Image (cartoon, rainbow, N blue to C red; front, top):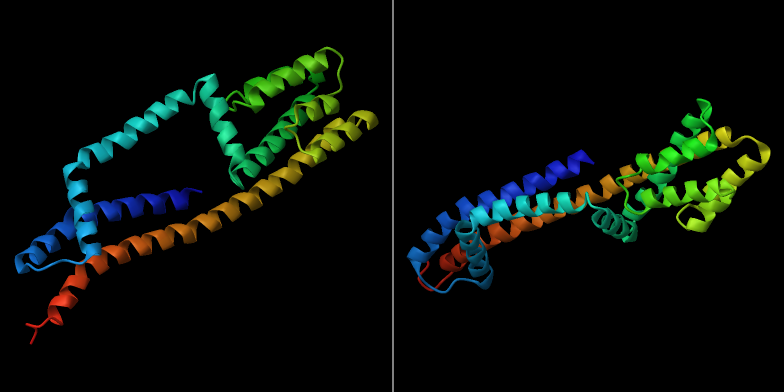
Length: 238
Protein backbone atom coordinates (compact mmCIF):
# COMPACT_ATOMS: atom_id res chain seq x y z
CA UNK A 1 0.00 0.00 0.00
CA UNK A 2 3.05 2.30 0.23
CA UNK A 3 3.56 2.60 -3.54
CA UNK A 4 0.11 4.15 -4.22
CA UNK A 5 0.73 6.70 -1.44
CA UNK A 6 4.03 7.64 -3.08
CA UNK A 7 2.24 8.05 -6.41
CA UNK A 8 -0.39 10.31 -4.81
CA UNK A 9 2.37 12.49 -3.31
CA UNK A 10 4.09 12.68 -6.71
CA UNK A 11 0.78 13.63 -8.35
CA UNK A 12 0.14 16.43 -5.86
CA UNK A 13 3.71 17.72 -6.12
CA UNK A 14 3.55 17.68 -9.94
CA UNK A 15 0.29 19.63 -9.98
CA UNK A 16 1.64 22.21 -7.53
CA UNK A 17 4.81 22.72 -9.61
CA UNK A 18 2.90 22.98 -12.88
CA UNK A 19 0.24 25.33 -11.51
CA UNK A 20 2.71 27.35 -9.46
CA UNK A 21 5.61 27.63 -11.91
CA UNK A 22 4.88 26.39 -15.44
CA UNK A 23 1.40 27.82 -16.01
CA UNK A 24 2.24 31.37 -14.77
CA UNK A 25 5.12 31.57 -17.25
CA UNK A 26 2.87 30.63 -20.17
CA UNK A 27 0.08 32.85 -18.84
CA UNK A 28 2.31 35.92 -19.12
CA UNK A 29 3.32 34.88 -22.63
CA UNK A 30 -0.29 34.38 -23.73
CA UNK A 31 -1.50 37.62 -22.18
CA UNK A 32 1.17 39.55 -24.11
CA UNK A 33 -0.43 38.36 -27.33
CA UNK A 34 -3.90 39.49 -26.21
CA UNK A 35 -7.05 37.99 -27.68
CA UNK A 36 -9.68 35.83 -26.07
CA UNK A 37 -8.39 32.73 -24.35
CA UNK A 38 -10.21 29.36 -24.44
CA UNK A 39 -12.36 28.53 -21.41
CA UNK A 40 -10.08 25.69 -20.34
CA UNK A 41 -7.09 28.03 -20.38
CA UNK A 42 -8.90 30.66 -18.32
CA UNK A 43 -9.90 27.99 -15.79
CA UNK A 44 -6.35 26.63 -15.46
CA UNK A 45 -4.87 30.13 -15.15
CA UNK A 46 -7.47 30.85 -12.45
CA UNK A 47 -6.46 27.67 -10.63
CA UNK A 48 -2.81 28.67 -10.98
CA UNK A 49 -3.45 32.12 -9.51
CA UNK A 50 -5.40 30.54 -6.65
CA UNK A 51 -2.49 28.19 -5.88
CA UNK A 52 -0.01 31.07 -5.91
CA UNK A 53 -2.20 33.33 -3.75
CA UNK A 54 -3.17 30.69 -1.21
CA UNK A 55 -0.09 28.46 -1.38
CA UNK A 56 0.70 28.56 2.34
CA UNK A 57 -2.94 27.95 3.23
CA UNK A 58 -3.04 24.96 0.86
CA UNK A 59 0.06 23.53 2.54
CA UNK A 60 -0.79 24.30 6.16
CA UNK A 61 -4.54 23.53 6.09
CA UNK A 62 -4.21 19.80 5.21
CA UNK A 63 -1.50 19.40 7.86
CA UNK A 64 -3.65 21.08 10.53
CA UNK A 65 -6.69 19.06 9.44
CA UNK A 66 -4.70 15.81 9.54
CA UNK A 67 -3.38 16.57 13.03
CA UNK A 68 -6.89 17.50 14.23
CA UNK A 69 -8.34 14.28 12.80
CA UNK A 70 -5.51 12.24 14.31
CA UNK A 71 -6.27 13.74 17.70
CA UNK A 72 -10.02 13.20 17.29
CA UNK A 73 -9.53 9.59 16.21
CA UNK A 74 -7.80 8.94 19.54
CA UNK A 75 -11.08 9.62 21.36
CA UNK A 76 -13.72 6.92 21.85
CA UNK A 77 -16.20 8.79 19.66
CA UNK A 78 -13.61 9.38 16.95
CA UNK A 79 -12.48 5.77 16.85
CA UNK A 80 -16.09 4.61 16.68
CA UNK A 81 -17.01 6.96 13.82
CA UNK A 82 -13.81 6.17 11.93
CA UNK A 83 -14.38 2.42 12.04
CA UNK A 84 -18.10 2.79 11.26
CA UNK A 85 -17.18 4.77 8.14
CA UNK A 86 -14.51 2.29 7.10
CA UNK A 87 -16.92 -0.63 7.47
CA UNK A 88 -19.30 1.03 4.99
CA UNK A 89 -16.67 1.48 2.27
CA UNK A 90 -16.61 -1.42 -0.23
CA UNK A 91 -13.49 -3.61 0.05
CA UNK A 92 -12.11 -1.40 2.83
CA UNK A 93 -14.88 -2.61 5.15
CA UNK A 94 -14.17 -6.17 4.07
CA UNK A 95 -10.49 -5.63 4.86
CA UNK A 96 -11.33 -4.33 8.35
CA UNK A 97 -13.57 -7.33 9.09
CA UNK A 98 -11.21 -9.98 7.72
CA UNK A 99 -8.10 -8.51 9.34
CA UNK A 100 -9.98 -8.36 12.65
CA UNK A 101 -11.02 -12.01 12.30
CA UNK A 102 -7.39 -12.95 11.65
CA UNK A 103 -6.00 -10.95 14.58
CA UNK A 104 -8.66 -12.21 16.96
CA UNK A 105 -8.13 -15.87 16.07
CA UNK A 106 -4.32 -15.58 16.00
CA UNK A 107 -4.01 -13.80 19.35
CA UNK A 108 -6.57 -15.96 21.14
CA UNK A 109 -4.88 -19.13 19.84
CA UNK A 110 -1.48 -17.89 21.08
CA UNK A 111 -2.84 -17.10 24.53
CA UNK A 112 -4.67 -20.40 24.88
CA UNK A 113 -1.65 -22.31 23.59
CA UNK A 114 0.53 -20.67 26.24
CA UNK A 115 -1.77 -22.03 28.93
CA UNK A 116 -3.78 -18.88 29.63
CA UNK A 117 -7.39 -19.75 30.55
CA UNK A 118 -10.09 -18.74 28.05
CA UNK A 119 -11.67 -16.10 30.28
CA UNK A 120 -8.32 -14.49 31.06
CA UNK A 121 -7.42 -14.58 27.36
CA UNK A 122 -10.68 -12.85 26.44
CA UNK A 123 -10.02 -10.19 29.08
CA UNK A 124 -6.93 -9.06 27.13
CA UNK A 125 -8.75 -8.76 23.80
CA UNK A 126 -10.15 -5.22 24.34
CA UNK A 127 -6.61 -3.97 24.98
CA UNK A 128 -5.32 -5.55 21.77
CA UNK A 129 -8.13 -3.90 19.79
CA UNK A 130 -8.30 -0.59 21.67
CA UNK A 131 -7.67 1.39 18.46
CA UNK A 132 -10.84 -0.04 16.90
CA UNK A 133 -13.85 1.97 18.03
CA UNK A 134 -16.42 -0.74 17.33
CA UNK A 135 -14.61 -4.05 17.75
CA UNK A 136 -12.71 -2.91 20.87
CA UNK A 137 -15.82 -2.38 23.05
CA UNK A 138 -17.37 -5.48 21.45
CA UNK A 139 -14.56 -7.67 22.80
CA UNK A 140 -15.18 -6.19 26.24
CA UNK A 141 -18.85 -7.20 25.97
CA UNK A 142 -17.85 -10.71 24.82
CA UNK A 143 -15.57 -11.11 27.84
CA UNK A 144 -18.31 -10.09 30.26
CA UNK A 145 -20.89 -12.31 28.54
CA UNK A 146 -18.62 -15.38 28.72
CA UNK A 147 -17.83 -14.47 32.34
CA UNK A 148 -21.56 -14.70 33.06
CA UNK A 149 -21.66 -18.22 31.61
CA UNK A 150 -22.28 -17.61 27.92
CA UNK A 151 -20.50 -19.64 25.28
CA UNK A 152 -17.79 -18.06 23.14
CA UNK A 153 -19.43 -18.91 19.80
CA UNK A 154 -22.86 -17.71 20.91
CA UNK A 155 -21.32 -14.49 22.26
CA UNK A 156 -19.56 -13.86 18.95
CA UNK A 157 -22.78 -14.50 17.06
CA UNK A 158 -24.84 -12.14 19.22
CA UNK A 159 -22.57 -9.19 18.38
CA UNK A 160 -23.38 -9.50 14.66
CA UNK A 161 -19.79 -8.44 13.88
CA UNK A 162 -18.20 -11.83 13.33
CA UNK A 163 -18.49 -13.81 10.12
CA UNK A 164 -20.71 -16.92 10.07
CA UNK A 165 -17.62 -19.01 9.32
CA UNK A 166 -15.84 -17.83 12.47
CA UNK A 167 -18.94 -18.41 14.60
CA UNK A 168 -19.56 -21.91 13.25
CA UNK A 169 -15.91 -22.99 13.47
CA UNK A 170 -15.53 -21.67 17.03
CA UNK A 171 -18.71 -23.56 17.94
CA UNK A 172 -17.21 -26.77 16.53
CA UNK A 173 -13.97 -26.10 18.41
CA UNK A 174 -15.82 -25.56 21.69
CA UNK A 175 -17.88 -28.71 21.31
CA UNK A 176 -14.98 -30.93 20.20
CA UNK A 177 -12.34 -29.52 22.55
CA UNK A 178 -10.14 -28.43 19.64
CA UNK A 179 -10.60 -24.67 19.98
CA UNK A 180 -6.90 -23.86 19.63
CA UNK A 181 -6.57 -25.85 16.39
CA UNK A 182 -9.73 -24.27 15.01
CA UNK A 183 -8.54 -20.76 15.86
CA UNK A 184 -5.22 -21.41 14.13
CA UNK A 185 -7.06 -22.57 11.02
CA UNK A 186 -9.25 -19.45 11.10
CA UNK A 187 -6.16 -17.24 11.41
CA UNK A 188 -4.44 -18.92 8.46
CA UNK A 189 -7.57 -18.67 6.32
CA UNK A 190 -8.16 -14.98 6.95
CA UNK A 191 -4.46 -14.11 6.69
CA UNK A 192 -4.51 -15.45 3.15
CA UNK A 193 -7.73 -13.55 2.39
CA UNK A 194 -6.28 -10.30 3.75
CA UNK A 195 -3.14 -10.68 1.61
CA UNK A 196 -5.27 -11.20 -1.51
CA UNK A 197 -7.50 -8.25 -0.64
CA UNK A 198 -4.56 -5.89 -0.03
CA UNK A 199 -3.08 -6.90 -3.38
CA UNK A 200 -6.44 -6.32 -5.04
CA UNK A 201 -6.89 -2.88 -3.47
CA UNK A 202 -3.37 -1.85 -4.44
CA UNK A 203 -3.93 -3.10 -7.97
CA UNK A 204 -7.13 -1.04 -8.22
CA UNK A 205 -5.59 2.14 -6.83
CA UNK A 206 -2.54 2.26 -9.10
CA UNK A 207 -4.35 2.58 -12.47
CA UNK A 208 -6.81 5.11 -11.00
CA UNK A 209 -3.93 7.27 -9.78
CA UNK A 210 -2.17 6.98 -13.15
CA UNK A 211 -5.37 7.98 -15.00
CA UNK A 212 -5.93 10.98 -12.70
CA UNK A 213 -2.30 12.00 -13.08
CA UNK A 214 -2.41 11.69 -16.86
CA UNK A 215 -5.72 13.54 -17.12
CA UNK A 216 -4.51 16.38 -14.88
CA UNK A 217 -1.30 16.86 -16.84
CA UNK A 218 -3.22 16.55 -20.11
CA UNK A 219 -5.69 19.29 -19.13
CA UNK A 220 -2.86 21.63 -18.14
CA UNK A 221 -0.94 20.98 -21.36
CA UNK A 222 -4.10 21.43 -23.43
CA UNK A 223 -4.81 24.75 -21.72
CA UNK A 224 -1.31 25.94 -22.61
CA UNK A 225 -1.06 24.74 -26.20
CA UNK A 226 -4.65 25.32 -27.35
CA UNK A 227 -4.27 29.13 -27.47
CA UNK A 228 -1.01 28.71 -29.38
CA UNK A 229 -2.71 26.56 -31.99
CA UNK A 230 -5.47 29.16 -32.29
CA UNK A 231 -2.91 31.91 -32.82
CA UNK A 232 -1.04 29.84 -35.38
CA UNK A 233 -4.23 29.14 -37.35
CA UNK A 234 -5.73 32.62 -36.87
CA UNK A 235 -6.32 35.23 -39.59
CA UNK A 236 -2.94 36.83 -39.01
CA UNK A 237 -1.01 33.55 -39.15
CA UNK A 238 1.55 33.17 -41.91
